[in-house]
Image (tube, rainbow, N blue to C red):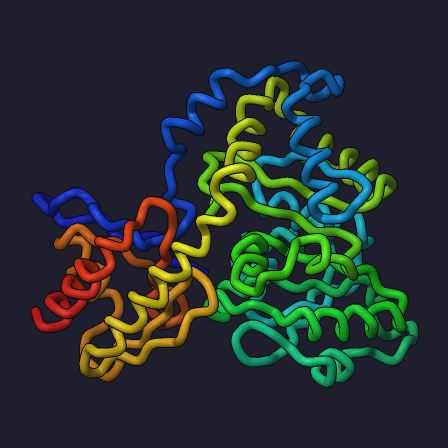
Length: 354
């Protein structure tokens, strides 16, 4: 889990280079204009044309029958699991998955499912590791209902699951009669990095969602996609968990704008992440994981400086980073320019030497 950032010391400069997360992005002026001009209606009654446009477009993009607009990606995961599973069922997912580490114990508290953590490097598990998790069916074992993967794997370093591996995992799930769900928080990063379209990437999954508040830069919203029957059931859970968002077209317009203007530019974030990784790797004692996408994880144990100390010292220099599992994470996004990368590297070098 990403720890909350510490408060900057009194008198510290404002954050100029925000590498804390791609969730820190802010709507661009053009996105705000699109939001203000959006046609709206009551989403609960199916009267919001902009929400309809977004959901129809997302269903087509993912190769699914239907979609539902939700406030957050976490709500997408919760509703998907509630729809796929019953209380006491088991979900198979990586041990570092978002549903285990970053959703506040929701699945124990609300969904009533058990999550079997599977191991594997960089947030990904193999077919052999999945098969090793298959339980013999008996009254002593929880019914295994759902296979879940996270594309990209956040704690795995923003790693991209290879399509061939995903297809192999889906084949096992089909053999076992399991449903399949993709946490697509940074799915478009994976698609851009691999040059594989989202419909092909998600073809084997019964449900998938895309978050618009990360690299795509919208202020709110995620869309959950699946079959018409699945989305109908998901709407019931949406109602139970809080209901509609009424004139949600204002927010849906930001998501539509991001699909038109912020997908291809994710390649810039990936290039900036690679440049950042190269610069950090030249600092003595810093061990950097080669990034697949826009997340750069690095270990500073060899410098003798604690990660928390580095984070605080960087804030004093106007740079924000996050900490995750003892590692430092820097995340590039549309508010981080190429010109900021050498500045960020210099700030890390100075902070470690301070």
